[in-house]
Length: 162
Ligand code: FES
Ligand code: FES
Image (tube, rainbow, N blue to C red):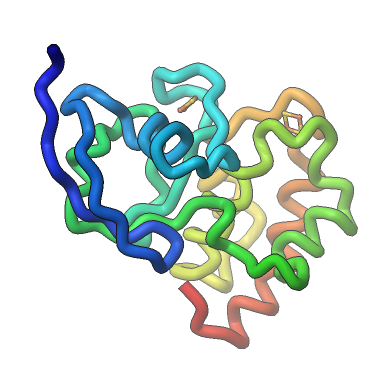
């Protein structure tokens, strides 16, 4: 029987207390225990970026972090970036610029871009390319993604959302 630990973690503004096997990744905890399947799993070894979530303000690969390591942390997944009522400026820019096709990489792109623009709303194209360089996309060629993030900057300059 695998060893377990009790953890408390705030995810998308809601506190969760759970018992988790010590070897379960944060990605699997989010997807299987909390049902937050917007966090996608591609490579499961830190290469593709599809599993990126925001932990205490930083973009983190949730396939490389254990759930127990998130004890006491604040986590934001792609589901937590928006309300159900309307698209956020970042989502709107992705739609406008056709920055997604199959959509598999999109949760990781959105969380990575959100963490970047929250910290650096003046990020230029080179900085955006650098920040997104660990997120693989097989469909778009990346140019529309960078254009979308550039356009979304204005909204982050005006707001203090995190
Ligand atoms: S699934 Fe985590 S980096 Fe690919
Ligand atoms: S939109 Fe298909 S992998 Fe990026």
